[in-house]
Length: 75
Image 1 (cartoon, rainbow, N blue to C red):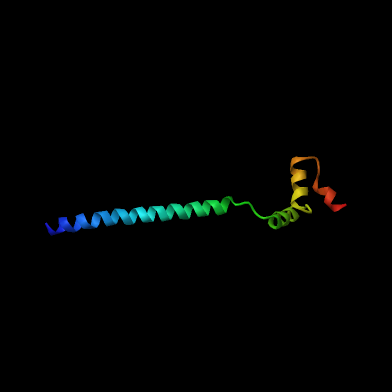
Image 2 (cartoon, rainbow, N blue to C red):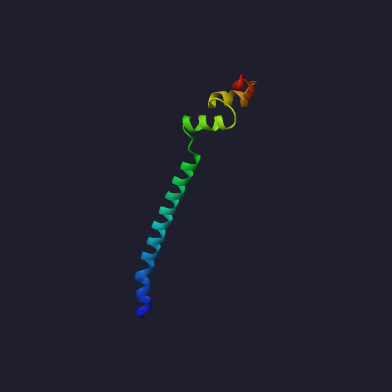
């Protein structure tokens, strides 16, 4: 009988704790996803463009989506 009473008192607390942990985990995962999907700033994009042979992000985008090439950057 005592075990039954302890379980009745413990079960709602266990559910409440699990719900709190679930909400905390969901919030953490949303924050991680938001950070992963965040667009890099212009300075970071310009540095990446230099790495692949372009002067800046705009010239890289022009070459990627247009007729420009990296050769123009070395004239």
